[in-house]
Length: 97
Image 1: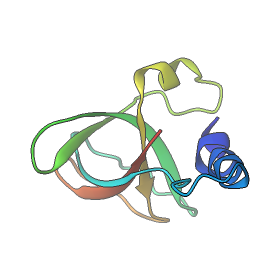
Image 2: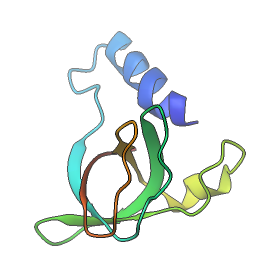
Image 3: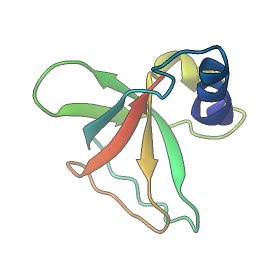
């Protein structure tokens, strides 16, 4: 599902002729720590509640590939750079889905 929203859906939108085919990118403040350092970049599912000048994003505790139920609670992906460890209050790039 992550690959579909990050790669396949934008390609399908572009192939159908849409000019706005990329997902909307936003800057978010994380509401909790993410301490798992990975060798590659990660897209973490989470929820952004609108309002305020900097939107806050709550990262879903269920991030595994088999955790499809967490998609129902999520509306965005936080982009976590390779090797990064982020703390609550840090700013990250995210995109809506």
